[in-house]
Amino acid sequence: MDMFFAHFLRGIVSAAANVVLLISLLQPKYSRKVTNLVMLAIFTLNLSTAVFCYSIGNLTLLTKIDVILFTLLCFAARPFFRDSFMQWLFSYITAINVSIIVIILSFIFSRSLPYPQYANTVLRLFLFAGVILLFRKVLRPLYRQVAEHWAVFFYVAGSAFLALSWFMFNSDDIVQTLTLQAVPLLWLILVTLAAYGSVFLGIRSVGAEYRLQQDKALLELSGETMKQRLSLMDEAVGQMRVVQHDQRHLNATLLELMQKGDVENAAALLRRQIAALPQKPVRYCENITVNAAISYYAALAEGRRIRCDLRLDIPEKLPFSELALSMALSNLMENAIHACEKLDPQAERYLRVHAIYTGQLILEVENPYSGEVPLDENAYPTVREEGHGWGGESVRAFVRENGGELLYQVENGVFNVRLLI
Image (cartoon, rainbow, N blue to C red; front, side):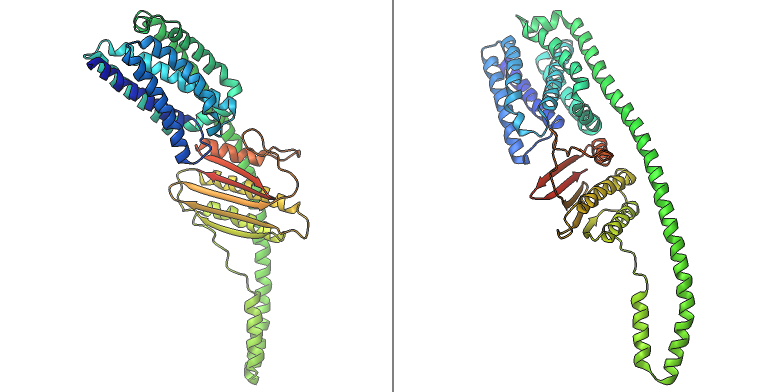
């Protein structure tokens, strides 16, 4: 009975950790409630098979059932997640690899500890917790990039899965196999971890190079923007000189009207002068960099007769690059303006940008469009026009680097994109 309780406790840890690990790697499609129900079903099924095998004292059968069960669940749970099938398969196999590695390590190292049946559970709990925290706090942005390029890295996950599951599935006595084959298994784990580590380091290096290229593009764009603003400032200085020159004539005219007692004409002249004065610049949000980008594209949209609905609650300080955010927002607004320009002249043209920050940034951009906007397997717009598409890729790169989500919706002539960071 004491042994069954130790097994049962270990089964709860494994089943719960596998569910949390899946949630950490994948992107749910539906609400949190639906996702939790799916995960609860997976947890219950895993724990039920474990209890059955514990009750008959056959750990070898449990190992084989787990491999088969994981394969079946791979297809059954797929519709509840946004990842494409191959992205889902890559993540699912990675979760199985992590689970098998944790099981092997906890068993081997618990043999040299007091009360090995309970030491195994404690080690398993700490190993799973460490892996989950590592993914959630450090590796998630990199992992999303790996999953999106699954075709390049799939052989790493697939080869590791075949090698690890071969030891599990072809064992007549799993305890004896883990004991006698401890050294080969540890070497296999080392190679697997090295392969995954190389994948993450490779993605990180490529990401760093991409960021350097993006920074270069940002500097070039900033230089062009600065030229435009200097030109505007020069124009404003010229206008101010004209205003100062005209102000002397205005003052002389007002003085003459007041001396004649013609107050009505003097007041009308003042009202016209006040109406002609430049308006105070609009402050859309507290963040200076983002506000500058919004101001530029808002003026561009209004100059092209596109109605703007701009409501942004973005603080001065952000936990991520405000320059990268301003570039992502600039790309989204530029694409929206480009889409509005293609509309029929009689059609309503508008650009809606709403943002709120409550520890997490929720940014939404919406505009009407004409024609068709095809989406790829990741529900991202596909580009057919030459010279376009880099803005969208820049936005996706920004979201990936910060572990966020990007959702596109195309319906009834309205294009909507929502960004969560």
